Image 1 (cartoon, rainbow, N blue to C red):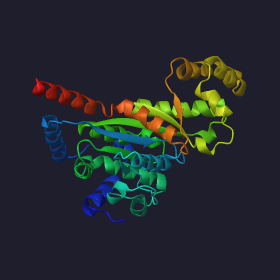
Image 2: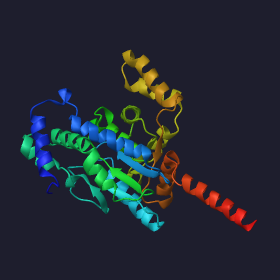
Image 3: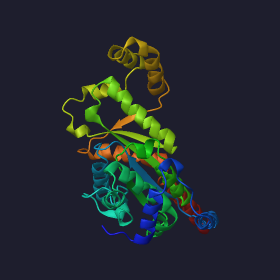
Image 4: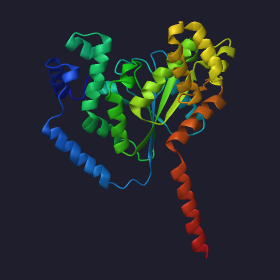
Length: 319
């Protein structure tokens, strides 16, 4: 796909060639001045209605795009407006209407060709270019939506994007400055959660994303409709800490006993990570997950306040 702004993009590529990611320089003085002016304009703008967004993250193959497609179909059924945004510069096929596409800004194929690098390194460079384009390309795209629109961002599956690289964190902060309430939706493939060690590993990745993004977080066990035996999964959804610790001690060497106890306390006793199963064959399951996300971002609460205020105004007119 062709780029909208080829010259800035190739300037960015030349900039990348001259430096490593660890020594990456900050924006120019002109960019910083523009960002300051833009931030002041956002602060001065009166926002009558809050904007809402989901940030759909998770390992590759966890079902993020399928979740977005099913969510779009569900919202069409209940006549609710929702816009799906593609943030994966390597994506090729979509089963949902794309309201906004990062590939119009940059694509993995172009970066691989120009920088002579592999797909993972190219994806990181694409996301860095997105970070550099927050105040121009992203803001221009967001102007196409109204203040009360609900956006769902379908993100890449490379875990470093949402665990330790600050690109998505800065992306989220920019959305907040634009008046968005954002919730992170982390998907974990339920087919891989077959024993306690894999379950704890999935919990740690989710916890890493929670700490990195600092967002309200909803964890989902995806692909529940593909499981033949759900008894093993149910053990982890509502398991006792002692039971999980005993299972972990059986799988791990004795020298890891203290580590196992600390992990179980973090996951079990402190309830830092909880997963909600999602069966895409059942509308009630999709609706339940959506309602949990809506609670996190307070979707609809401003509408209820407006209705209440309108009723009070009508009562006063009648008097």
